[in-house]
Amino acid sequence: MSGLLLLEPGERRLLTAPEFQRLADVPPEAQWFANLDSAQTRRAYQNDLKSFMAFTGIVKPEEFRTVTRSHILAWRADLESQKLAGSTIGASSLPSPLYMSICAKPMQ
Image (cartoon, rainbow, N blue to C red; front, side, top):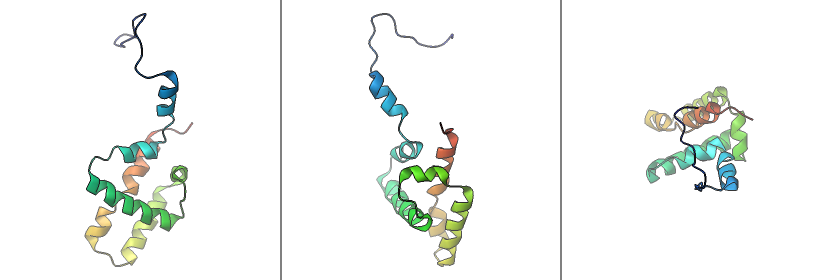
């Protein structure tokens, strides 16, 4: 295990074992959203998220784990059918990065 930094005997870890486990248990969808720095981007994504959840009937964050690319394509087609401006539809990209983030971490 070369290259790993290990605690020396007597050194205290900064996170307690329960704190470490709580962080490990944070769902990927919550991790992704917490990583948005811009308040404007967060607000726009919240609006997109509400729209996507209303379209799909998603109520709980865990339900995002069953979202497929087909759901995203159907939602975008629905946006297009509403005759929204192309820039509005193009800016409505929330589900794609969220979907990629969720799929990047294997389910336990």
